[in-house]
Amino acid sequence: MKTLKLITTIALTATLGFSSCQSDDNTEVGTNPNANSSTSTTASNYERAAMNDGSNDDFLDGNACTELLFPLTATVNDQQITLLSSLDFSAVLNILGEFNDDSDSVTFNFPIKVRSSNYTEVTVNNQSELDALNAECENAEEEGRDAISCIDINFPVTMLTYDISLEQTGSVVLQSEQQLYSYMTSLGSDELFAVNYPIRTTLSNGTEIQITSDAEFQNAISDCVQYEDEKDDAANTAAEAEAVLSGTKFKVETFINNGVDTANDYAEWSIEFTNDFKIVATNFVNSALGEIEGTYSVSSETEAFVNINFASNTALSALGNNWVISTYSTTLITLQSTTDASVTLAFKKL
Image (cartoon, rainbow, N blue to C red; front, side):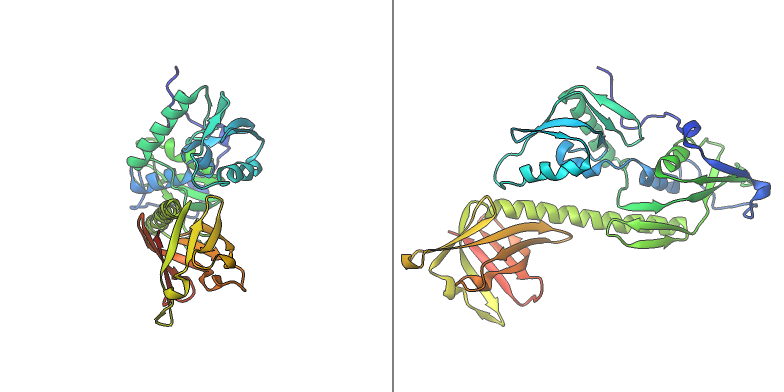
C-alpha cells in the first residue's frame, strides 16, 4: 500500500502564475530588519492559514485535514446516498440527525478521492488508507501543523522579498490561499520575506479586521483559535447534555422566576425527552389531563443551549424558553434563560 502523507514537498510554483516585479520597480525598496525566514513563526502562521481546509465535511470522514471530492457514494445509517456536491450534505445531516440516541455510521464506497492540506489529490482505496490519513491528521493537530481555518486572508497579498543581507530583491503578488501556501513552502534558506501590510482578514465569526503587522496577525490567530476552542467545548457539552436528556423522564426540580420557585406547580408531571426531539409531559395524578406534547432541540455556539417549546395554552407553556445549559450530570440538568439570567430551571431524572 502506498504510504499517504499529510504534507508533501511538491512544488506548485510553476502552475500558480505568481506575478512579481524587481526591486527597482517597487516603492518599498530598502532593507527590512523584520524580514522573516522560512522557519519563522510568521511563515508558519501564513502557511497554516493558507492550507486547504477540509473541516466542512468532518461529519462524514472525521478528518479536518482532507476535503472529500465529488462525486462519491456512502452508506449512512444503512441508507445509500450519492453526493454530487456540498449541496447534498443536508441530506446526510438529516439522516444523521433523525434520532439522537442511535449509533451513526458512515461507510464509503471506495475508492474515493480527497484533497489534502497541501492541495494534492489522493485516491483512497479502502478504509485502512482512510484511517491512515485520519491518524496523520491527529498527529498534525497535536503538533500544531494543521490548518488554521478560523481566519481567511482577503487576497491579493503582496510579499516583499529579501536576501540574507536584508536587501530587497523584489516582490510577489499572491492571489489565493493555494498560491500563498506554495510560496511559503517553497522558500529557500537564503530567502527572506516581509508581508506588505496592511492586509484584510475575515474571522470565522464573520468579523472583518485589518492586520498591520506580524504581531497583529499572531494575535488575531490566537483570538480566533480560542473562539474555535470555545465552540468545540460548547459542542461537546451540547452532545453530552443531549445524551442525558434523550429517552429519559424527568421532573421539574426547581423553576425560579423573579426569585420565586414554582416547581410545585409541576409536581404532578413527568416530562420525557424522546429520541426524536419531542417532549411528552404526563400528569400521573390526574389521567384525565392526558399528555401534553412539545418539542426540544439542542444546539451550541460558544455556549450550549436547549430550546423547549410548548403551546402557549398548556400547563407547561411557562417552561418554554431558549435555555443555556449551566450544569449537567447523569441525573440532573440545570438551565438558565438566555434573556433573563435570574430565570432558572432544573430537571431531575425520575
